[in-house]
Amino acid sequence: MYFKSTFFEDYLLNDKRITLGRTITETDFVVHAGHTGDFFPHHMDAEWCATQPFKQRIAHGTMIFSIGIGLTASEINPEAMSKGYDKLRFVKPVFIGDTIHSEVTISDKAEAKKPEYGTVTEHVEIINQHGEVVLVCDHLLVVKKK
View 1 (spheres, rainbow, N blue to C red):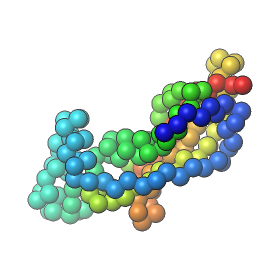
View 2 (view 1 turned 180 degrees about the horizontal axis):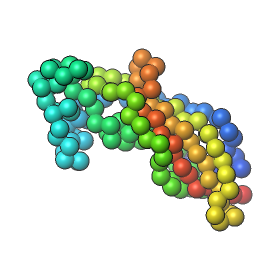
View 3 (view 1 turned 180 degrees about the vertical axis):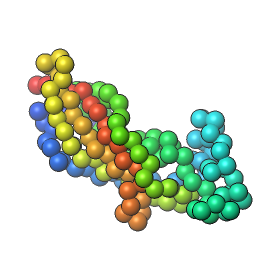
View 4 (view 1 turned 135 degrees about the vertical axis):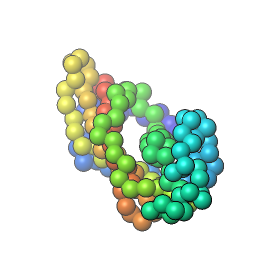
């Protein structure tokens, strides 16, 4: 991780970056369930899941969101602040042993309420080892102007 100042004017529409991958483990399921209290059988009960359509435990959507967004945090931009996330959808299930990576595309830029800032939208797709999008969202940033 390193610091890199990127101002509003430096963001270019359709610029894209791709992260490294991360394999999802059973430990991830257990730790996330402990952090959130979500011990639903869909995530934790292998025997029950064997009787369900996917035949195996499904990763918590919030865990895949957290890990996938965490993968994008390889550089710290001191000129930008996260305003939040929009249009979050869990598109496909993720299973133990799947490997995900994130692809971030600058999809929009606009003026902000304060004239010394602009807003940048990063469209985030989290993709599994088969090239399938498993989660999608828009990351909204408030970015300082030069």
